[in-house]
Image (cartoon, rainbow, N blue to C red; front, side, top):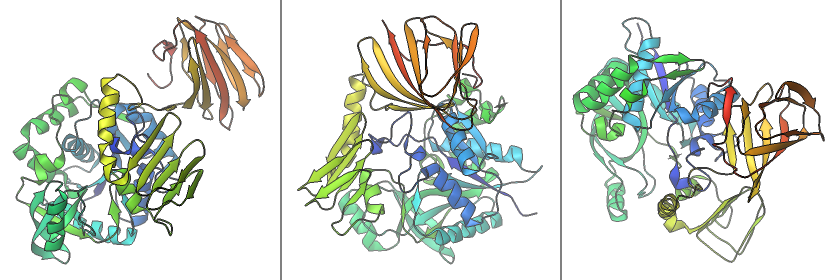
Amino acid sequence: MQQSVYPIVLAGGQGTRLWPLSRQSHPKQFISLVDESSLLQNTLERLFRSRVECAPPIVVCHEDYRFIVAQQLKDTGGSSATILLEPESKNTAPSVALGALAAQSQASKDENPVLLVLPADHAIEDEAVFAAALSKAIDLARKDESLLITLGVKPTSPSTDYGYIQRGEAMAEDAFQAKCFIEKPNVERAKSLLAAGDYFWNSGVFVFSSRGYLAALARHAPSVHEAVQASWQSVRHDEDFVRLEGETFCQSPKISIDYAVMEVADNVAMVVLDTGWSDLGSWSALSSFQQPDAEGNYKHGDVILHNTSNSYVRASSHLVAVLGVSDLVVVDTPDALLIANKHAVDDVRIVLDKLARSERQEHKINRMVYKPWGNYNCLDAGEGYLVKHIVVDPGQSLSLQSHRHRAEHWVVLKGTARVTCNDKTYSVQQNESSFIPLGAKHRLENLGRTPLEIIEVQSGAHISEDDVIRYQDIYGR
């Protein structure tokens, strides 16, 4: 019997180097960076187009991202996927182990399924070449269930953004034993690796059997294996999600699959991926992957450039004009602006460290906040007030709640709101408003087929997202 293939999509990263667009509450895998779809959606769509015969994907993410993932899967037509929630981010070695256990639980009895591990935030130029490499790796994994396979990207530059893999003896066409792994090198070392001709970028795409990976994890990182196995014993299904026992899982060390297994195992193979590829891990990586104009510029949004070259300029909310400069990255968002030399963008981590030390929130959240029922955008705030633009998706509902310190005034811009305020329930049409007194039990619902848009004005002595008492919530918060 041919082993089934289970895609394990890793969607738990935080993408901090793409600040201020990517933030802890809404990281890069959920953002549209290269086209109209998010990177997670691109990953799933690319897998579908590859025509690799496989089971529905298993998406592993932190529980904070569960509603974003569920909505993006729904929008992509991937509602049959399993969403596996981590109570705490522990890097990729435990995440892949969870995916392996989930695949075993879904496969037929005594089957040793093949895992296709895909990061949710990559861009790939030639999808046909990618599909061929996946098929070759899957065939190798089926022939040798102990083999651990990674895709090595043929390098096109002496990049310092990626780790490298040295190829060893040939196993088949474009398939080799992996001789050694090298962490991200400095520029001089990267140049020598490129010149050597037998080093490849480490893509972070892996193929192996479920039992093969779990056995290697037990051998090389037993504490990770034990914690994940123990937490899986109390797994439970919660509507669209699969949850773990948090305390046990959190005992796992935080470690990548490369450090835990791939760099220390002696049965690792590499299949060559010879096409344009990027993990979009930084603004320089993103700008180098996308097609520039005649002056070497890339622009997104409402941007005007004059006498500007070799620059990446992205506008999110208003006009950005850039004049007489070169080699810049300019990223504008409603509440933060990044201006950096292209060669210094990795220093964005220094900004994030300063924000964290000063207890500011711009490294964690942005003005657009995504909720299971829709989203809201903070428009203005001051002493004793906050103004939001709220969008409630069709058929969705906010929780029945009250506030100790604030009242709210809602003005409907589009759609029809169903409002509950204490013992009354009524409709509020476009251009009408409703007042929610301090302490009132209230709920906002959209029973229509189009998004409901409102302006909410909060007023009170203390304005905080923590000032919520929930009585009923269809999302189990």
